[in-house]
Length: 597
Image 1 (tube, rainbow, N blue to C red):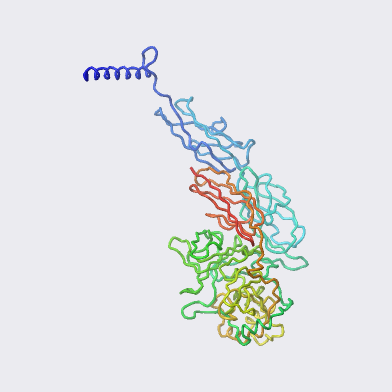
Image 2: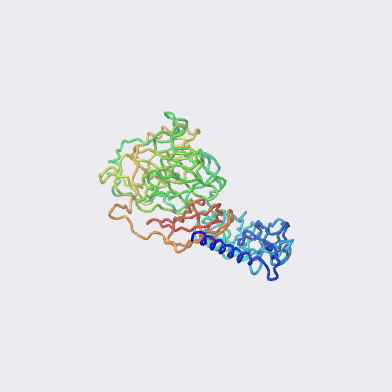
């Protein structure tokens, strides 16, 4: 029985094989012709901006002839209206968008014209490039400006601090615009191209003065590059910012006398900055100014990440750390100013990592063009939740004879309260006469400064006109400044002739405690999109968002601090981007993923 069954299975198998063979035989018994030629083009979908190019490749099978003929919209080699493509498959888009804004790329086998493959291109407006704004400074009120650059699309808008102006398209290289500036300060001008592929140029700054013959403020681009470099007249933050307010005529706080008495009337002023080194460390808090060429790097948080601004940030690997060249275990602050995008980055307890990133306990990003504030009860790189840099005494401004802002100082004791613009306390005393963070004191108008040097007089005048703001716990009446070998330490030492009793407390109203901290809504992000959301590596993608109630925003990774409502990225791999928007009441995030194939 086993032999009969085996024979049956053998015959069945032969029959099945025979049936299979019949499928490869024509009806007249002759073999079928070989498989036809096939062409496969890649990519099959692409977004290309006007004036840019896209490389296509093909794979030809079924023929020894691998050559193909390229066409755009059925036109061999294409033309200037829809774009051209060369024999290597490199497509060059037209300088201006056709209507409709799409094109079909076809590759046809040279050996078999019936074999071809096609790809669809969506044509987008170019990313505008802004090179100049004229005039670059003007008075408040109505203004007219002309901007020049390249790749301006029909319908482009000039943006003034993110707001579209009435814009006239002159050419792809020039726009004119008009608007009204209601306040003085430094403002960003940019050009926005419309959809398809809406995008915004890198900004340039203009300065708006108050009119009446007053010179406009100096733009942040005037800052020189490098460590401890001159700001050349630039003053961080708008003129109405608390750091820049003249408080020489402000009311006296009713508790001024008791607060000064608690500090200690005989406590001497100490300039906590100078030339050279003390115990192997520089004297003061250093800073460095960078340009747009400084690449942003990641920040890794080691303590207060939930109250810190995320990276990336343009922190050089050799940025000076407080206490350099031997920072030790102090506060290890790092301060970096960007003279192109006008942002200030501050780190606390900072350590550079081998891969170029930085480790820090906390960080804060400050928009130098606006009155930014940290969320209530949040710290910054400083205990008071304040920026550090605007409170430093710097040699370049002292030597000019005029310091146009308040100075930063420390006190040994503070209570659980803060005064705006501070946002955080680090209480170590319950005495009601202990200072709240953000308390402002000024040198009495009656104090005679005539016997002091010109450098010291510049400091003393600032203490009368702008005062100084309590920003951290530390040695009492220590004034912060930047190290500079041009300081005369012996001359600065004469400021020790001042005592706490020579100062008075400016009216503090409001004073916030745990029971009275303001409450409100964090920012609202109604949309955060990527266009296109699927793309090839290195292709520009526009991230766009709609939000309200925002003081400042950061996009992670790759981008960093941003203004406006869009940004351009070019991911090399699939990337999830997170938009972090912050105001005085908190933080909101939204994410979008760009898929790279």
